[in-house]
Every structure is written in C-alpha cells, then in structure tokens.
View 1 (cartoon, rainbow, N blue to C red):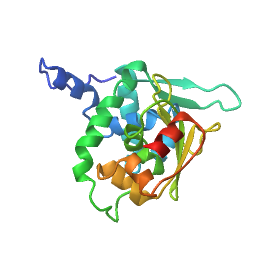
View 2: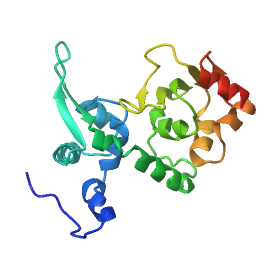
View 3: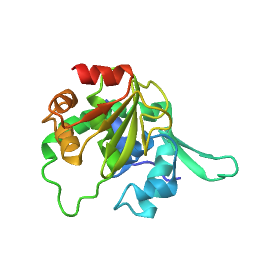
View 4: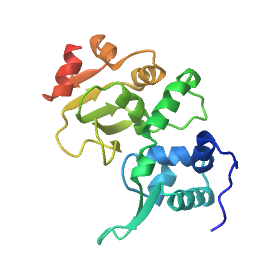
Length: 208
C-alpha cells in the first residue's frame, strides 16, 4: 500500500486529520456507526462517491485501525466493514461537527440527497437515558440505541425488537431538531412528535 499522506506537523489535530481529513472518510464513519455494512450498502447510502474512492477510503481506514473487514458466514458469505473501537471513538467528533454545522443546514437544495437515517445522530443528541428508540418518518424508519457504550449507535429500518419508545414525526420537525431550532422535548409538547411505548425513555419524553 502507498504511504498515507501527512501534514508532517507535530500536532494532535494535524495527526487526526492525517487519518480522517480526506473527503468521504467521516461520512463512511457515519454509516458504519450503524454497525457492519456491505460495500454495496455503503455505496448506496453515500450518493456521489465513486467506487474507486470508496474502495480506497475503506482500505485506508482498515490500514489505520479505524475499521475492519470480515466475511459473513453462509448463507450470507459477503464481506462487511465495521468500525474498530478506535473508529467508534469518532462518534463525539461527528456529533460536534453536526452541532457546528447546524447553521449551514438551510433549506434543502434540489440536488441534496436525503436518507432517513442521516437524522439519527441529531435525534440521538436530544435523548437522555438508555434504550431502543424507533423513529418513523415518511422518508423511512430508523432506530437508535440511546446510551449504547459499544455496538451499533443506530440502524436503518424498524427496530429489531419492541422499542422502549416509538417516535412518529415528519422530516420538517426532524430538520428543526437537527438545526437546533427545536428540542425533542419541545416537539413532543407541541404535538409535532407522537410518542408511544412503555419504556423509561417514552415516559420521560411525554413528561418533559
């Protein structure tokens, strides 16, 4: 493998950017926070990335200890990519970038792609406590593992088991939460989010 490009600066920020500063790398991390993903799934949820660039970034991430690749047992027998513990430590970095970028999330442009699960990290920031949360939008469903210390942070599609809370809302409300204009508790109180479920998280949201 070719040597990774470096800023050649004795600075922790520069060293971090040596690893994750290339275009697409942090967005690949965002996708892998959902757990193991196949190459085809990653390519589908990263519209605009070329196959060559995606393959190159995945190789770099594996070399740098941010992700690993493994083969699923039959009948799947496909390769999947997943974050290492070191890679998963980028969650607060992505969350901080997401908060910083709120001011840039103006009206959606005609060329902007959208996946429902891209709202996962902003919604996760609004949750206090632990538990499985299902979020239902017209654009699709996703689920969150609030308070998770290892394993996936979120997942695409409905919750794999009965969630502690189920949230039904529209993309406009999700966008307002993502922009920091509205807290999840405020959205529940104003009737913009429908909450169901008997878990602690559901009760906390209804009582907030």
